[in-house]
Length: 428
Image 1 (cartoon, rainbow, N blue to C red):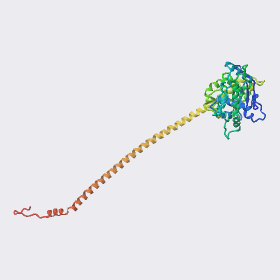
Image 2 (cartoon, rainbow, N blue to C red):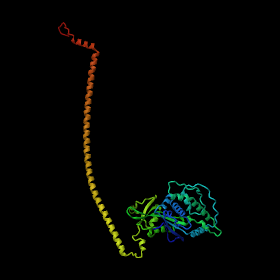
Image 3 (cartoon, rainbow, N blue to C red):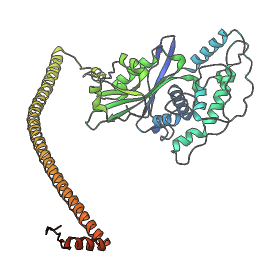
Image 4 (cartoon, rainbow, N blue to C red):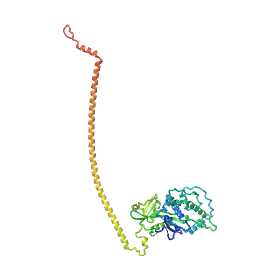
């Protein structure tokens, strides 16, 4: 797709709604001098704010700044579906007449402080014609380190939201003929849906179209708008040639993408794992287009013959056979490797068992040596104690002899006294 903006033919949806599809690259658009307006009588900056507001309202877990950086990122294209001004005005008049009464003007807005940019943007797509909720009149504070585009986006945001409030108040008041003033319809009422995508080249050389964001305004859902956007993404003559369409789908949107041919096969989608997932709670899904694209079918000399189909089948069969052979070879080699490893494991186990047995023997020998050593020490200790006891007895005897020397002399004298003779001559 060439250029920064492409207009497609109008399309009709269920419920008598018609829309004008536009594909725009906002990054290139704001760098182009005298760039054409995306919507008649609407500034391009306001269209960007309305698109960011719609995506932020439908995907509140992302945040307005991340949404803006995605929409305004180089290489990102945005599909915008908008209604005609007269159709929207007629729709509002019909809804107002169904209420049965003329609404009184909404009181003047009170000056209260804002809590977030998200709250301001959400107000644009409340899909309600009740009285306007009181929100901020304070300018949005921005950091000095942010990019110029985000600063420019925030500078006019408050004025843009105030204009949307004024238009909402005008729609609350009907004229005598029951119609609503044309000035009561702004860009926030014209846009029905938006989607962002980018063409990327993977390290494998494959061209991938990545769907980043997709949102449909609440009152226009279940009318086939989301399906129409998916068909636009599948039409390579509009979005450009690619090999695969991928999307990080929210868990509650998996059924929608499966209905349109995307698969969540983890083995197939593993080849796209280098695509960064910027959002949480999502799953990678992919769509593989047919070999023959609509670009080739638009060629006047194009002819899809049975022979070509058979040739494509032969090529696919050969590729599948080659892949199978490679897998069988790999598995067979792995089995042989496992057998070798098991043999080595058995040898190691035998070695471990032998070492464990030897270790037990050494433990027993050590135990016997320790017992002998303990018995030897016990024997020596006993002999030492006996010697100490014997020495103690001898010492005590010597001490007693020194303590009683007279007694010892008497005993010696008595033992040396000669026997005396009796008259009979016998010694006594």
